Image (cartoon, rainbow, N blue to C red; front, side):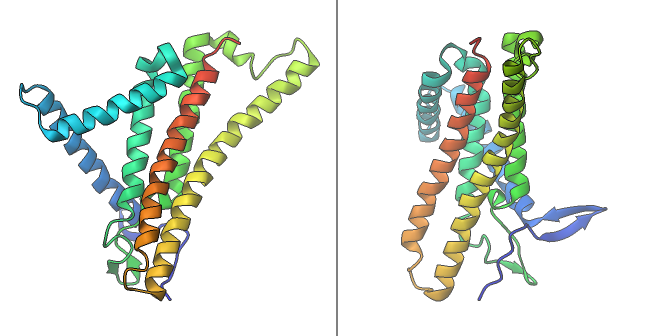
Length: 236
């Protein structure tokens, strides 16, 4: 039976900094996205566009229309953040399903591990999301108006509601982080166990399912962020 670790394993140290196997795959995905972005930008400067350009352009236009239905006239401000969340999480989810991820070993440790199967990574995404929600809230409503959502001493009821709002914002971090981590980690565990028990093609239907789950989780994370952003910048 393969050993399953709920936390990312350390491959080596750079000084006192531990390099995890999830970090290594994350770095490869980061380089991949940078290369795709550079290619897309270079193609946009040419008269004859490549198939890659039109594919990415179609995807970005679809995301733009989707998010604009939620945040409306503020789409140009929020779109870079929302599209970055969607694309980053999607590629990270799918990269964890590639052949060799989790199966190429260095000693008893997998060389590569899906980044979103590491709670540290999903927690970082959640903190970024909730932090940016607060930043945009202050930016669009002003400090006094937005802070009154959490600290309002005019009425005991509003004071209690403010405390509940603070708890709600903190709970968003936990919800974002554990929802994404739980779904991706559970999927990788399922694929590992099925492949171990029935090695020949038995995991293929589950692989297709995990591709779909990876897409849904990226969409859910970015869509929820867009909804919370829309609420944060609304005067009412």
